[in-house]
Amino acid sequence: MSEDARYEDGAEAPLNLGALDEEDLKVIAALTQDAVFPASEMRWHRNGARFALLLNRLRWEDANGARQAPERVQSVLMVNNVQRVSSQAVPKGDADTILSLLDLSFAPGDAPSGDLLLTLAGDGAIRLSVEALEVTLKDVTRPYLAPSRKLPRHPD
Image 1 (cartoon, rainbow, N blue to C red):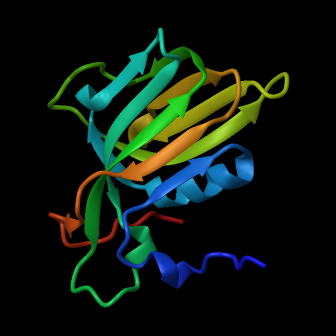
Image 2 (image 1 turned 135 degrees about the horizontal axis):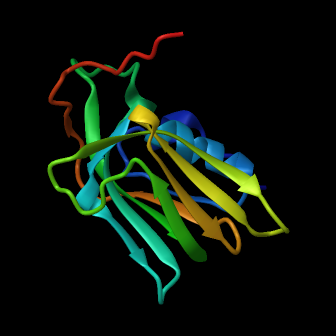
């Protein structure tokens, strides 16, 4: 009989998670909340039907850990089965514009298709129309001290 993974099991290991449904996506959304990235770090590979985003995410899984200050880690957010990409208030390819990811959500269409919405701070948004939900989040660097040394705060 196998045992479910425990929160403590992932303490120092890099994340490598997948989401195939809305419940799985909620976990990835929580772990990518307040991730920041330059607008130049987004790529849609139309022929491969993939959208990739290199982001600097907060290590929320260690927010109450023994560290002196919050950490970030570079991660790749990969979305497969992408048929169309649209955006609002997102400058494309501008390395000087830093965007902040607030949430990921899925609006189902004709099963299994739908729209994956990446909600950004400042009224920005990216909509990915997908044939089926398939998202991965993978840490690609070692954690580093967050430059601000603070966790973001959101007004109620």
